[in-house]
Image 1 (cartoon, rainbow, N blue to C red):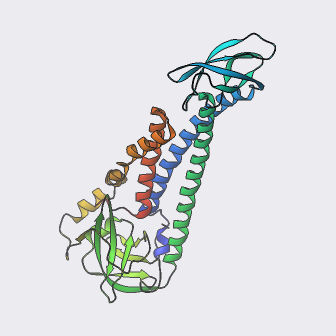
Image 2 (cartoon, rainbow, N blue to C red):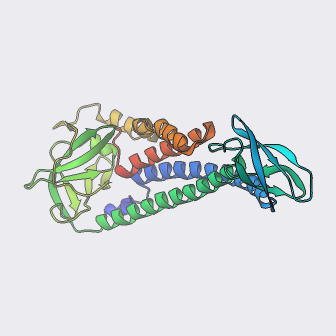
Image 3 (tube, one colour):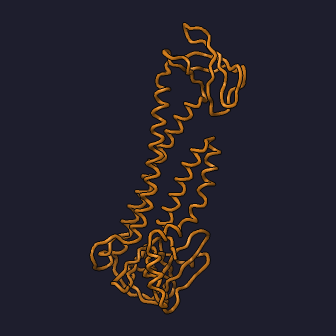
Length: 320
């Protein structure tokens, strides 16, 4: 993921893989920003409640009503009270003694261990921390990809006959350059419309040695000049698994139309949608473990879906 100048000439412009990566990274960052913003609002509200609960007392659970307990307790220097306290975890059994925290100025909103307010504060803080970590990781991976791909294009070039092949494994489809030399190597590359009309075999200029280097870039001649093919992963010494599709030996008359349609980023995102399918199930699992509700499911599903699109961009998904 670099500029066209890295491939040997041409005006500076963002390559399609870089635009794809920036778009999906932006989606992840936007989702993280929304989730962190909502969590920060919740944390501020719950922290205000918790912060003023400086008083301490002991109470007894009189009864349990669904997600709330009837608490009988006596604030120091005041009369005995009976209040309902919402809880998130398994409520204590009737008759159990429990510690009580309260606001001395407003004792009508006491807190006990497992109270919904405490759980909401903890969940909000976890969400903020998690989204910050996710945002930092996706930015770090993007930066690492840009640096390593620029280094790949800086390697000495050599002309090598290759074939463009696609492999579909599960929900993912990727393009590879299969060398015609022995021993064979398979170079994963990010999708570029020029791949659609690439004859099989054809001669490309490889930047690096597929037999020795882990990351090898390529440059191929196209109708509007040289096209850099950005590596989407390390060179493989073994044939990828999955369903293989080879490019035809000669492009047909529909190549230009198909390449133009596949070049659209909307087409790319539609092709990546299968990787979003697991997101709702990940959300259900997280919600069950976290004992959250609908909002938890929506938040986790949105984040998992955005990460699915981002992962497709990082691994070089092929929309063709």
